Length: 169
Image 1 (cartoon, rainbow, N blue to C red):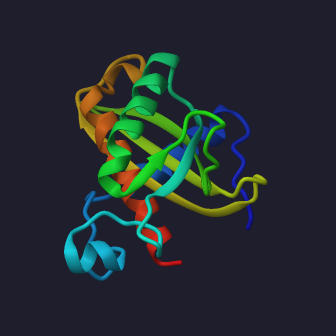
Image 2 (cartoon, one colour; image 1 turned 120 degrees about the vertical axis):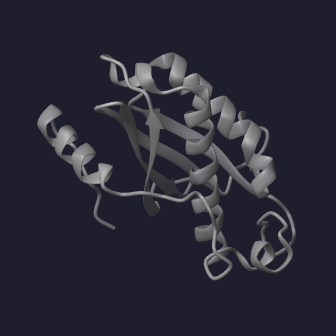
């Protein structure tokens, strides 16, 4: 799989501008949802009925406080999607889920584009998906316009997209 490398602020702005036109409705249609969700409304699990086990890798882009909030939100939201997040070495994850996030104020809104990478334990990229969230309100500081509710939507949409991908394997 080819990787996208952003080299420099100009490339980051170009990516953010391109991704700004992308949208997500944060819902899973029955045709795209994992079979367990599409048919029963239950969270996605492995074929044995066990939760999908992941480790949250790097969350690059936001300042430390926003990164901590997003990581905590991912950990709190994951069980609702049938995903278990491991934080220590006592349990081996099946996947590592990492992200590159960019916030771009545009007028009276802030657009957060987020590119997620699903890797195996050896670091090989298995899948990537790109999402975006738009929040009313902006700030002179890009991440200043991003609140906890937006971080929750980011976590929920990322975990949903991951569960759909995992369910399609």
